[in-house]
Length: 411
Image (cartoon, rainbow, N blue to C red; front, side, top):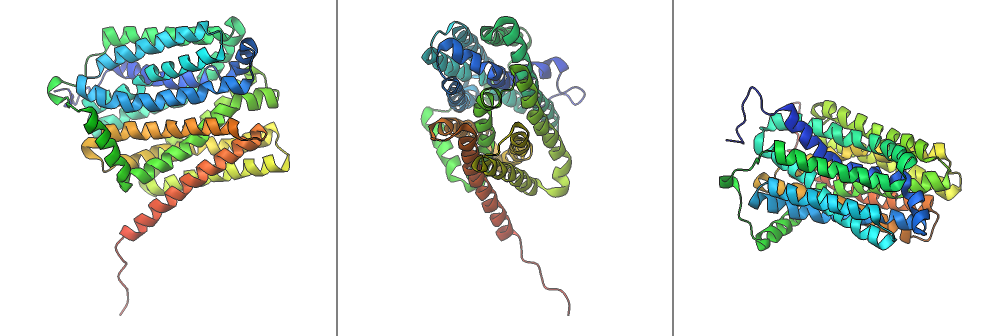
């Protein structure tokens, strides 16, 4: 059976590479075009902030798509949703290439996300189908490296394409990536969910399961913590191009290095997290990461209010906000899914949807506040991280309540 893999070779390198490429579609689509936002705004005759609204549109597509693909793939298998999602991603990328107005771009980006998020959903599902818990941990670690490396490489590739081909070439590259993934899926990816293991879920059952998850505090509280703390990073992503390129005068090429520096911090802490979790525990590491993010956000707010924001000082604060996600993301997910049993797949989809949903709200709030961008960004971050840290404190309070009392010692 597929869920009982061989102990000698649980998966091939080719299989895990394909899953890694599917997983990378999301970060590539978010980060590759960030250096081009000012150039796109000029060509479309709008402000950079209006083009940056394509990021909330993308986050909305990611949130909605994950809620749909999870239960659909449990019903019909993994390969058919991949065909549909990757085809939609490629078609939407083509529309982005020829977009001549901001409205067309926003709509195309939404459908690009709706198609592209199939990759990460099906990659997680395929690993869960085929591998044991220990083998899955190894496979997920490889995918995490891809997820961490993509934000470093994507802006660099986007900057190079911006010089050579203009911003249209960035979406042409995403189109080629989508088509390449389609070919790989068709020729080298076998269905991982056998017919006898598929669940015939109705729409009502799906909605009922999602409602039950939101009522379950064992899922709800850590999911809110992870979603809110992760959304602070999406606020940074939404503001980064205008902040660094338009406000601080950084070139598109240097922007890629700055963006990659923060992503590198996230990789380092996520890998350090795997080494420390047995020693310090999941909840304590979640608390440390949330505290790091809080420090960074408060530091940025103080800078913005004092009027002393510089490129160097802003980078210092942002490093703590972004790198802290390396501790908060994985640990919040582990706590949220720990006791979900057969609902783990849909719980994972709902948690991803919550994170990108909060990212959508963060991006919208960023440009609704009537302040300078640096102040608006720091306010949004402080609110999100403050709420996320509150959820972490609730988790720690519940943990202390659940601990048995220590018996008195001595005579």
